[in-house]
Amino acid sequence: MTEILQKRIGDVLLPGTRHSLEALGAKVKVAEGGAGAAVSVELGVPVGTLEGPLRASLSDLAAAEGAKLVHVEVASRIRAHAVQPKLQPLQNVRNIIAVGSGKGGVGKSTTAVNLAMALSAAGAKVGVLDADVYGPSIPMMLGLSGKPDSPDGKSIEPMRAHGVEAMSIGLLVEQDTPMIWRGPMATSALTQLLNDTRWGDLDYLIVDLPPGTGDIQLTLAQKIPVAGAVIVTTPQDIATLDARKALKMFEKVGVPVLGLVENMAVHVCSNCGHAEHVFGEGGGQRMASQYGVPLLGSLPLELAIREQGDAGVPVVVAQPDSPAAQSYRDAALQLAVRLAMRPRVTPGISASLL
Image (cartoon, rainbow, N blue to C red; front, side, top):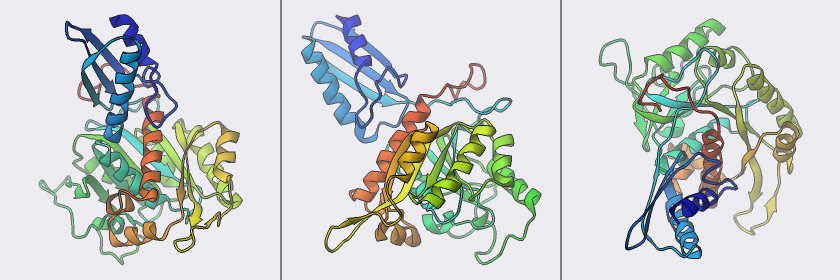
């Protein structure tokens, strides 16, 4: 019965996804005793609200097999995943996720911040790196001000907001100071921000890239160990045209694209409830199908998202029960799932990461 139950548990779908526990690399252990069976499941994605539904699914499965579950343990352990050749994950950061876009104005930074909040709410240890050195917006979106500490005059402590660590060039200069830098200076600033920040033990570091496919994106691909990329677009054709360029860029430099996020997909009138596709409909899904990458989620065009970003409290934190927050949580889950299905780092780099 133990072997049968263990095999059947591997076939159980993770709630909210179409993927089985076995496909996600979950570690399943079953032990039988006089009173019944005990099951432990270790997932490679943040557990969060999945624990209750997964427990129910396991109990139902055991009952169908004629077994009684007396103990169910569900936990998560985020592993380090493979990065570009000749690079290795950072010592304290298991997975760096780049969030990019082909053009500006598609809500990339808002998406990056709320995905980070959603992963953190699910129980992961998360950081955010603002790589847009010319137009840093993460400090305002997270409600951060002041200067970070430097305990030794060489490294800097990340600032913290809403349960996540954060670093941005915007925290090191005055708010209205323009970054009048040529490409090499900007790329040097990015690598310094990443390497000189005293990151804690992180499961995910979300990197908010500037729009386009320029120097900073190339530096990221060549010098920074990236486990995967997410492309943000809006449904309109001109946005998906530019998003295609970003997607192809990541493919050419060997960074796997985990999926697309379609932002501003639909607006629901707060007065009458009428849904309208202001920027077109289905552009993200068509692009995902054309290039064989998953559509991680479609996010709404909603006033509260903009208002909460300006107020420094992302909507996932400020209004966790709202449909908008749920959309971000759904997208974050799909992101974590796609990463969990990627190859892990080769053995022998750092025991703390494996």
